[in-house]
Image 1 (cartoon, rainbow, N blue to C red):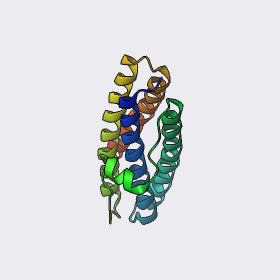
Image 2 (image 1 turned 120 degrees about the vertical axis):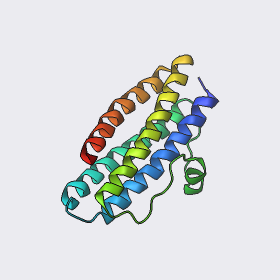
Image 3 (image 1 turned 135 degrees about the horizontal axis):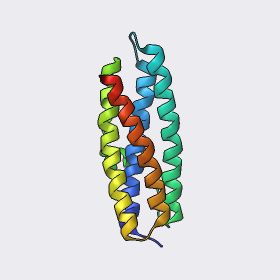
Length: 146
């Protein structure tokens, strides 16, 4: 069942989620302003969800006989998402989340299509679940920005 191309893409997704997770932690810790209470809680909800997704992705990689990346050096090198620094305002944080989610969704859709072609139902299902959740989160973040 090993599919190196899917494993490679899942490792990029794993790296993206690790950077996204850390960005969310930073936003949670450093948010300031009139939306502090609302966003502080929301960012915690998002990073908690991301931590579960990180575990799910790593376990999926292992299930299909791959090796998940596990060092910060590897995550930084593989990730398509960049670490964010010194963002304290709600608009800046939410805008960053929107950008990161767009990248993550594009990659999840690509992995899902690869899984369909490879008859990898487990990876396809995982990506479908992630896509459903991330599309809703993206919609909410965009609505908040208006």
